Length: 276
Image (cartoon, rainbow, N blue to C red; front, side):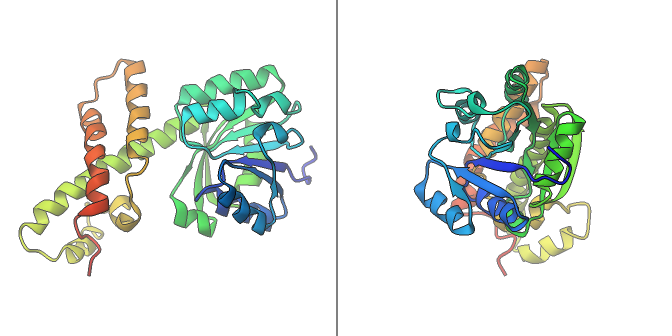
């Protein structure tokens, strides 16, 4: 592919994050073909100008595949399973894994991709759906320099920041550590909020003060946006990494259990950090 030529992009999974990614890629002149199990999601990206394919195996003419499905088993299914995309890709194609999965998952897929003359770009994304809307995501890259260079062109359409952290797998390590700190802090905000509320203090005023001090955090700033939807999955990935390394992480283990209740609390009766 010449330096000035644009990738022909296939994207598998166009939910809440994938849709604005498609919008920004199309706005920057990319030819995008989408696959999703939801017809509603496909209708939305078709209205943006995306082409629609029935299954991953129909993306064989694409040179750059973006994965936005949710779990390790789904990533393996759409890449390596029956009707998976790797079987139909031409040599030189890239599979960019933006799903949050185990580092071992992306490394295993990269090994199989390389055997076919293709590459994996380990490319999880951070910052959430509102940042996706604005094209201001953070992409954490792991991969070979030449693969990263091609990825920057595509991901630069919807990411304001891109960090190349190392080899395939290191992008997922970065995302796991980001998420670990997010959920440690978010659980802390539930407990701190409960204690503070018991004193009768105005919690939003306290929040404003904390944002000027060492209590400042992105989790506190974005409290309204935090849902805990993926928290347990994120913590399971971290614990798998800890188990593989033979590390005892008591705080991490406790937070893994606490996020289960955290999701219910955040959805039903959270501390009113932002309720004026």
